[in-house]
Length: 195
Ligand code: GAR
Image (cartoon, rainbow, N blue to C red; front, side):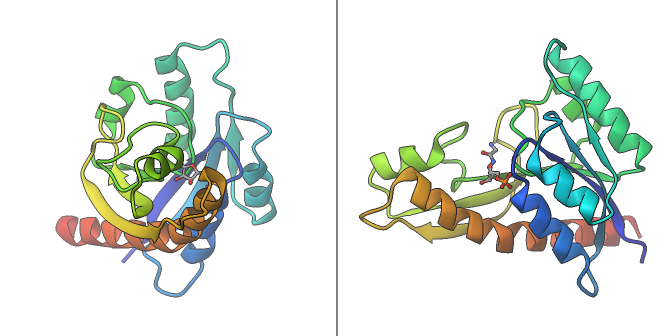
């Protein structure tokens, strides 16, 4: 079966992108990474992707309307022949037009156990609420922020001494396990439906 082609969008360090990329090189992974793209030309993850021989693209969102910047990023994904757009720390809200053109084909990871704590500062909010667990969720992207169908989640215990930063660090370790697995099973399921 041909591998699904994924374009990964990042804004920052790109460590989830790296986890997705290295997982794609293991035997039997049903997806391959065809592009890493960013709205921040200096994003660390771009140099890692380049070093690993992956095509990269960057275009700042500054001075552009949201839908226009989305269209630039979308064109890069289309030029790379991507079947899926995978958001990995891509800190931009996507326009409804863009999301609607890729229904079921944009996937995101969010650092909370959705539907809890949509948006920003998820770890601080979980600690403040006295939650026993934080975690991460892989979900489909819909026009409403952090609200699409949940694909998979992983729980991370919150320790009494945790700060938002220490919790974020452990949640990321959990994300590196979760994201490649959730993406692989989603694209494999989709391939079976269309076969
Ligand atoms: C990850 O923890 C991801 O869940 C979060 O940003 C971090 C990116 O780290 N995403 C969001 O907050 C999206 N709303 P990375 O760049 O090292 O992968």
